[in-house]
Length: 615
Image (cartoon, rainbow, N blue to C red; front, side, top):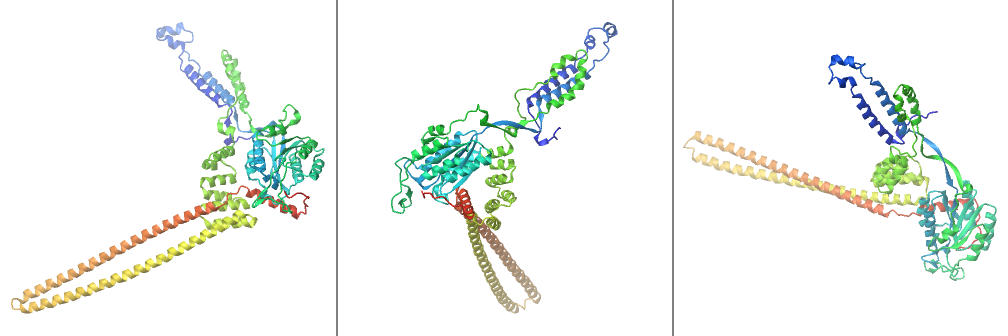
């Protein structure tokens, strides 16, 4: 059955074979343009004699065989290039090496008899182990008064390495030391993964006598070996506390010591080894020797979608069969070697990057290199795409993509994106939805309270800006009234002055009445016209001055409003940056909440805790 063609996955496995079409085309063009022998003789022999001297010289050379040869060559080149569009399930052998690292997080691991402390040295050693393991599955379990799974069996060692530095006794919900519960979880992890054989590495400074018996009964006839790495010294050291050192009920300082002999006996009973923690890798090499790959039991056959593409080139050979029939014509058997298909040993994809890395892998690499914008375009998963958009500063798209899932974490991330985009009300609503699904989400509650405080500050600033605007409007009205009063006063003064001038002119007219009544009347008329034009001129100037003053006031008011808006925007930006700086960066918060939830569930199910020391 032939799978349907998928255009976006179509490519060539060996694209360099397509270059063979170029010389074939050049060769056919060369022979196509070659003239017949008769045409070559026409330059030296009389055409009337040429037909009698050369047999068939007047016939044209057939050119269609060259076209068929070019077609066959092109089909063969495409077949050799290896067209493909589907993947094949590729069976591979994988080393069956399951390792569960069990870390003691009791208070005694804080002792500083080895520097800087037992806990720090143990975490560094786990990171060294993860860096050396290039095959197999690894899990990590942490325990104190109860045990918790940090990571199940996986080949993703970098993820475990990112979680390891956050482990500390302070994040454990119950103080104490329960290695038996931790080994029960390790046994359950092996069972869930279907591993019949496996190794457990216990990193601790000691166990009790009752723990030794319980562990022997738990691991006997189980097929799992237990190796132990001892952390500390036989002399021991006190446990640091806030005020001095940790003391027992009698007021004595507690000095936990390395129980080397007991741990050696426990490892020997369970087919394992014991070694003290060291500064080099000798302890890891001794406790976790490399498994031999020659044994068939050490590998398992898995079937997974690997980068093995189904070559469809051989199907094109069917198209060559009709052309191959023409090879039996005289002379055409010489081109048969050109049509032989040989499968090369090496192959290269036409799209080099897509062959070696999936789009999600390319996106993860781009995100790791700081190119979040490119990663957002490559990711197929909406949550990864949203995270990339968030890091690229495209907060609106990030919020839309986070909203596609109805989970507490998605709503919390959507709230962060909306807060970054300045949409405080929508961000608060997103935090409310997250808290509605998980009321114990401390980060969402903290961010919500910060946004509410920021919103109150913005409302207060807007109220102050509104009050300042009303005061400026009142001042504007007072100024206009004052200008109007001044204009009225000027009009009254002008009218009084005109009245006085007219009285004087009338008196002068009476004295000069004897000269000429006609001349007096004309003069009075001209004076009245002059007075009227002067009055209109003064009114026009007053109106222009008042209009210019209003335009200037409006311009000043607009500039003041723009400056005030810029100041508010700057204050809002500064407040947003201060709020973002207040968000705590606590990588252990997720594990702490996970451990607390598991501990509460166990208490609700009525699980009783074993008698154990509190340190």
